[in-house]
Image 1 (spheres, rainbow over the protein chains, first blue to last red):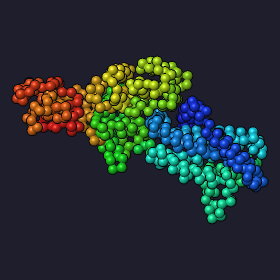
Image 2 (image 1 turned 90 degrees about the horizontal axis):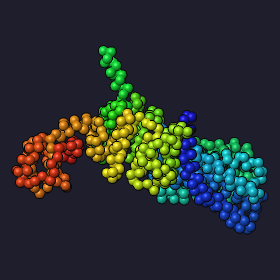
Image 3 (image 1 turned 180 degrees about the vertical axis):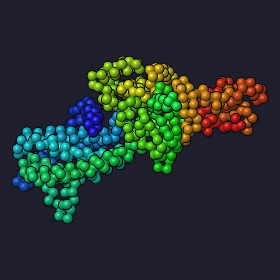
Image 4 (image 1 turned 45 degrees about the vertical axis):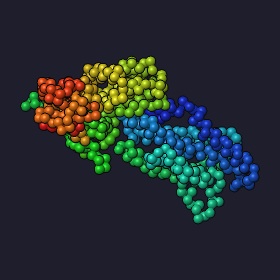
Length: 256
Length: 314
């Protein structure tokens, strides 16, 4: 067990060695996109929008923007990133001749995704805190945990799509019909309860909704018991199921 | 009695790989159809066969990347799949594809693989530099992978397979696609490794390579073993004598005299006979001079046993 952990940690080290070589280009989209959205939607569009639940639109938008960076980081890492490593760079073929097995590859990739998710969410939150968009600065210590809780299930969705797609272009379909809806209908841009009651249950079933709710609670310093006793356990359950599924699927794919 | 028991124990201990009725299927396709073999400590063992014969499947099962379908496969006297992680600390694989990490430099590649293979941090640098030296790659230590030639990449894969000083070295088509100079360099290194007491398992398409390097070999076809023995013994048993090559137009299509075996391909007609005299006489009968006269070699054995020789009466 301990050996599995150390071997997986070496995979994290390997990914970090590669990642830090082009740090700026790796980080810029995750940081720049939410910044531009905050400016255009928050300040520009926000001027024309009435307050939501007693908050200005930019205050409403900030926690969702922060958590969406964890989602995109995790999904892209285990979809495009992992798929390229597996098929074009073929690096696992050689890794599997070392004591590393499929369990270590899966654990290593999820450790890496969790770390990236935590760093991204915390990083963006710190910037937004600087703009006065967080009610209680002390709650910043919770952000790494929230980042991990969102990165794991979304990373698992990415890894699953890596197992199912037949070529790299098919990720576009996964993105359009799975990730985009999550992004637009999880309470980032508008309160979910505004949707028609016949369909409002649907987004509430999906993982990102619970991540956004956690982020709202951290940013606005409210509903903590609901956040940590309901939304966090839902995300943990999602992670457990999706990661197990992805592991079984990957084992079948790699061992044949 | 006691001596017998001791011999048995000795042979068990000196056996690094043993397979009994080993089978592997992918759906309806049977890649390996019940093979038995063993690899002794210190020998260079060759696995030969045409594409699709099941060589790579066996290799993958030996290092535990693929589970077997049935039968037994023991590596270091343990089940190859269940004990894969421990076994892989004692074996090194020169993979068929280089599968080098192109995002990292030569040294970084070897550094991270030393970590995977459990080489202690304080010993890694010396180990890597020593092996880069051994395979004449020291000058490329800080180069990017895509700046290396095909031969250099192949040598670097050797470095990667040797980082943890393995007892068993698996070479999966180590010289495919390399120029003769690099091939000879690699053969020299393989011999050095064998002289150091390493056990080597080699798969190859090049019969000459197998003849030069292997103590013992196994020829496979369609998932089954068709012959086993030393290169010399195989030649003696399956293709004794001499071979003459003739131009197609000089040999009638129905030509199949007693005592000769005949193989045709696009480059000519190959006739094998037990004695050189028979072939010299044949030149008179056919009223044609042979393009080439040579002793039969492993290539003739291979073509005969894998069904690529049109065998008649021999």
